[in-house]
Length: 177
Length: 195
Image (cartoon, rainbow over the protein chains, first blue to last red):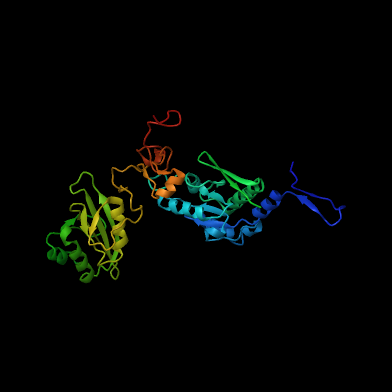
């Protein structure tokens, strides 16, 4: 059963819709996710394909790829994160304004993938909190879109504060509205 | 290529057996002169490759192999150089393309290139204490501090040995057809945890 987030009655004069502030805020946020394309390897090619007309990520309100972390909400880590690059990934994550989300796209970003070596970070969740993991090597654009829609679902279920866990610690971010 | 003129000009040069291209072992001190002579006199105007080699049983242990291409005659020549005190003269003044190759050989093997204009690491970060392509270095890596101290302070992350079990880069040996990829280190697995 879908929990209704708003009340509307056509008999009420003046077309009043009753809802919660959180529901409105989450609805707006989930349909205006501005991704930060952290393209590090071949997954970034599929990410670009998802932005093209065939798959068209803009159908879901996420076409505004921002290459500045200060204008982005969601970092899509697409590719192999080496230890040398991990520092940069974390710094860019730190520069993004709250609320922010992270999608680990593909096997490498999720777990290090096939790169079990001295140079590769074994999963980007070691350095940033990840909301959605997408399997595949690389995932097809449909898989990315599915993951992003799951992220929208997650955003819509968030309460008055953002709560995420990272390495066993719970991080709360208050939303001032 | 005119091998006779070449070996006559550089008598210390030793001709090595090779199935594909003329191959010479060049004296360490003569390398720059040899490469310049081959470029200016014999037309080997392109440095196709330069790489380090690790021979743990040999003395000196490290060497460098260069492949030079004559672009008008489509001829290759291969040069072997043994390191002296882990060092080889840099040829990046003659072939600028050698610059990054030499930095990579330095990064991966610890071979110093004397006279290199910018002798920094190129793949690993500058503070990394090892040279990962040396034979004794484990593929999984060795635990060292994270490259950025401030990121490490926030995340508690270190550079850790990667889990090799079930990984793609190790096989059990024997014939390729029946070598199922498996962990080289079989002392621990799902049933028998690492002690």
